[in-house]
Image (cartoon, rainbow, N blue to C red; front, side):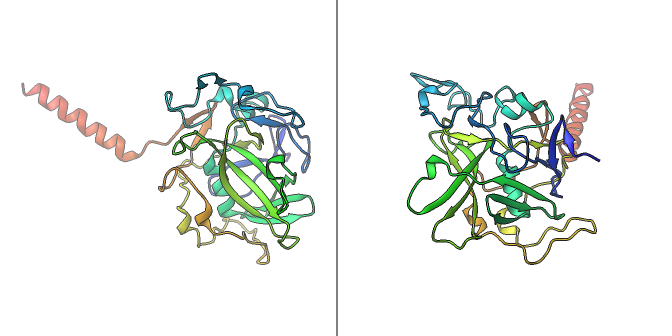
Length: 282
């Protein structure tokens, strides 16, 4: 069976959330091909060979950012500003920072020539093309490349955007690579790797980083080789605006809907019954 959603290929890594990852970036047509570059919140790609400034950003004016700011308090990308939804359809979206964290937590990382490879719990592989961003040019950096998330770091006064960063220093061994969750300004040019939530597990909650010592095992006959390369950094390097676990959300038409707990319904019903009892005894 062909693994496609709306005509675009995906990889099922066997992640506990059920998230499916696109096989390639927006603007690419096959694995390991370079995709388009976007400013965060824009749905039209930018030419990476040109010089872009903050004033060129869609939601910037002389008074500052006119959307996703301290006034509207938005912390997640609206569907209308999601390049994945706009260009690939409602079954796709830009990954949340939680999606990237899950990828880092449950997958093994390898560097193979010009390909960054993440191996899922079920043994399937997700490939990212290695490119050298102008933002990482320097004597010590061999390459560095970033992919957008849909989330804003609201703890930052500049409302920076969370992103996934893969990089390698020249002094490292040939196969060494690191994967971090960072943040940068929205006028920065980044790449988009869509995800699909059509099989999302609404009960999944991403464990806190200090709980990830236990290995997640996909409930199937597939297994991962023990000689896979592990990450070179500790989970303490992963940053977030909150220290608590973040619930996996189901995305439908670009809007987040979290599963309401059974306890909430019970408490609501009790409150209604108490109100009715009070009214009838007046």
